[in-house]
Image 1 (cartoon, one colour):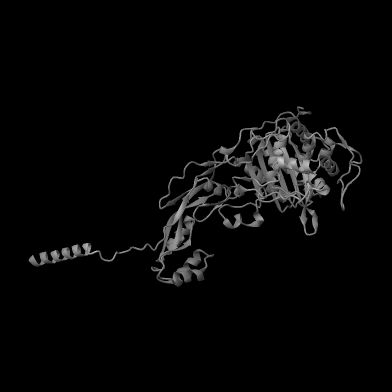
Image 2: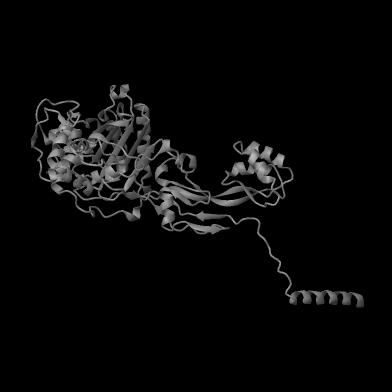
Length: 530
């Protein structure tokens, strides 16, 4: 007993000596990195339906110091993950000084279970947050994507981060905060995408795009670009072949620009609806000659210039306005500078270096100036909503009050354009007659523009577009449809003109979305209020 007591006393004394001696510090080194992830709020449509959310998913990592057989791990893991680079895995596992290597993050649970069942020493899982998009490609361009840390990379997801809506977290997920409610209506979004897919098939087109906007507030109810993207597949998000055509690309849109040209002439007092223009002779500018596709063979009033889609008539109106006046009008409508939405920056307009005679004429009917469809739609919304500018938005919380923007044209000019747009669809001579939907008083304008190529324009490759609005006695919604490189199929009577493809597609869209938006069909009126 005495011996044992002396032994413990000796040990206690030694411990006391070491504690007070100030010897070398013992440093603990953490060889396994702390994985950071971001917790994100849910994204909902305007009706509260889920579009994006966070879910917990297993991520696979390896500890090389515990791995018993590098070859076995590489071969058996490669059997479950066929795209795994086995040579690179062998190289990483050969570094026995490392304690932590990510192998695959965000694994589906079934795949993770198969790896777990392999029973390979040195492999383990960590639960991380991953973004899930239950509707896959629906509204994919608008939503954007996140990186491996669940941090927003582009689109709405990036805007959420910029506004402080995503919080980094270590270990257990933190609270995601309040959901983000968009202006998008999933019913409208699905209908628009479905009809555009059908149009691509029907007209054998290379691509299609479309949008639905509230002309009073600028709220985006739908935005579709085909081919679409799955936000969960980063390779698709950054694939140039899947570029967002609505706000990521610029296009010469053709005769839909005549909406702006006629509005400019009426609002600045250079013409009235019954002003007669001599369109019997082509216009010349340097070496260029501008003719009408289907000449009327007689002078036309301004109303007829619009409905018959006369390029010569539009050019005469632009020349009467003058270069400075034309540029000032485009400036006022926001078509000469870059804009952005919550989905990201909108492609900058491509303007000619100067507005000479040729540029004035061609811009009047939608050539020589390329803009993003979203930017053009916002400008046109101001023309038909009573004359006030709108700012396109995808966030319900940022939508402006109706008609709160700056005035750009008079109410009288706006009413005149609404009458013309309705006549262009309602009358048998109008280029937009195939967009009519009984009961919904649709108005609109066609545009067919040859696509630029090497050495000039490609005659058989066109962008066919149709800009529609309804109901034209009190416009609420704007629908824009764009079909890229359609073929002259039997469904289009062998033609590639917008009146044969984009116009009927817009009508099909309106027929489906009007009931969703609560628009009630009524008996068509012969004359709109003046």
